Image 1 (tube, rainbow over the protein chains, first blue to last red):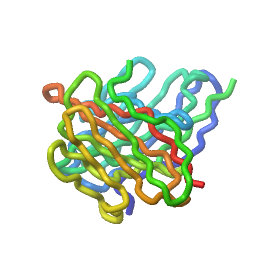
Image 2 (image 1 turned 45 degrees about the vertical axis):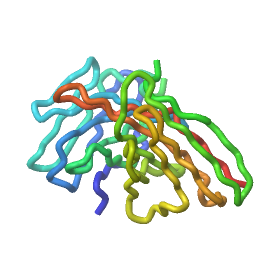
Image 3 (image 1 turned 120 degrees about the horizontal axis):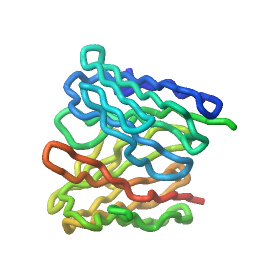
Image 4 (image 1 turned 135 degrees about the vertical axis):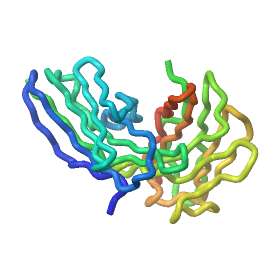
Length: 110
Length: 117
């Protein structure tokens, strides 16, 4: 079983749509959770950290369910510029290194 | 601006030659840096942890004699791919973690696209 699993997509949605991505992780000792965004052939960039209480940053909402080892990202009012691959990222338990999911590709269409 | 700088961004080399990739943290000291590799349409995979002043720690399956890591200062780590072969062609990315109290954030270099011909 992969340490971090994501639906690879692609998710093709029209502008203005709401889209949700899910992710599960296998190591219950993981402490830090993130969503990163990666554009084609570029380095990943932090989108947001994910906290147990849930957190929101503008159109983006992240949720963490530790009991189910499940992380989600909700994007509201999708923009063309949101087209990218979204990476679910978890720290390796007891370490500062990160484990990346394979990413979910989002294509927002006009 | 970038807080982690990686160089070169792209390199093409002949099979059998060695390639050195540099990773610098620009405005903070990083005692630990990480090297990842990403093959097309796959996730980033951790190769090794670079520790300032000591030996790197390699992930299972990564050959330490092939991927030489040197972390001689608090702001610079280098990865040398020795005797490169076409199967080493990949996107190599370094990362440094900056601690900010209870929060940490990983910053990534721009990545190096290596093509071995």
